[in-house]
Image (cartoon, rainbow, N blue to C red; front, top):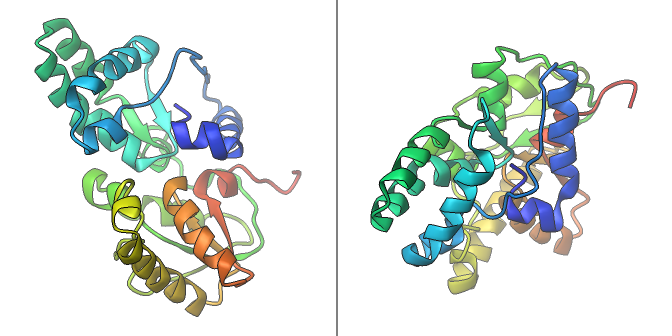
Length: 239
């Protein structure tokens, strides 16, 4: 599952997921019927409007062994919000379908570590990086140290601990629009901590958060770039 923001703004992340999984021997399919997971509507209270979106999700992904996506927030929606929307619809078949797709939806690091049982994916990235654990992956999914375990196994990579890592970056979807000044202040704190590490790259597992932090870093002319975890794990010495 590519996700809306990746499809629109960060297609390289989705391509990296496909390259990585295929390198690890996974039979990867990309159902073109996929659309949004419904999270933006659900988070803002438009539950009835989310019903057809959830229907489309289960229709597009029904029958797969696993649904893998490079976004903790979208996985959180599939696992924890889709059931609420399905029950609101009053459609028992939709409730049953969601009960099948939800547990089979994985954030990328979960799928690699828990399902495939790998931490060293054969990646090569000779740079100093620091990792920001995004709120949904950290709090809603509980991915824990899976992303950092994957990063520490990357050849040539030097991982610097991020001060106050568990603090929110300030994006929060529509929060950034409705509370712009607070959002920017939180983001400024986050990138200040990132710059303190001396890392070249700020890494996260959600491009929405990276969009927010990357914009601040760019305006500061910091020289620090942002990259999704998938893009780093997809790189090899031969690339």
